[in-house]
Image (cartoon, helix red, strand yellow):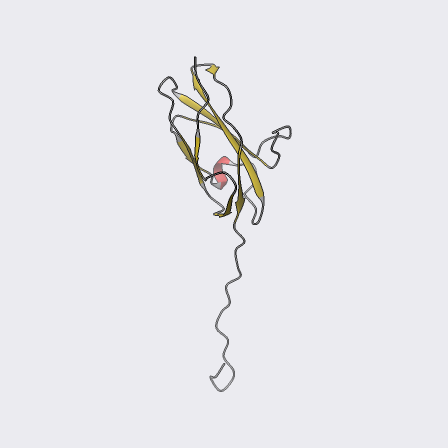
Length: 116
């Protein structure tokens, strides 16, 4: 029986997470694949932004494996389930993180005489 995995990072309810986080979980010795889902909806009823299969116990969320880039200052929900062949165990508990708010970068400003 393939048991549910434990999500490890980012920790549940993390604030100021980067826009390309690495999601990680405890490996399951009976599994050879993991299904990872990321959603804006904690019940995952809407189509997930990420629905990927990996053989690793971590996955970096980058634009090539998401249908939409993660937005700033947004809450995301994620879960993972372990699998062996075509059989999967139950989903992990759902964890959430909020992405960072990037502050605009200001170029230095100089007056005509060189003083700010």
